[in-house]
Image (cartoon, rainbow, N blue to C red; front, side):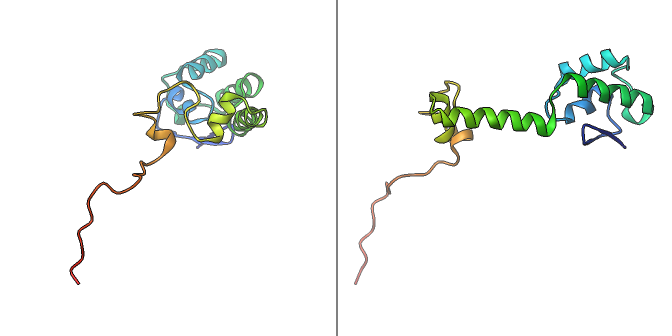
Length: 128
């Protein structure tokens, strides 16, 4: 069971796919890391030696910001935008898309489930 940057990566997958389980590492970055560590991208994680895992971990530590530190940086950037009340910060505060997407018809992912205002159906008079 290999642990890289505090994340247990799947052992049955190829190394380049398993590295993408670390927050902040995508497919392109994964292949760049493996090229620098001189590890074949298609080998399975269970077949890696401790030296290869060590080289991969070393390259990640010295070159990339991943996992908790990356999340801290991103949340700090968003907090800064909110504090200075920039347009993007106001969009984050209002829980709306901040990158120019339309919200009249779409944007349900960011805004949440649709809430209907007012009733459209006529109420039936009760017999009393």
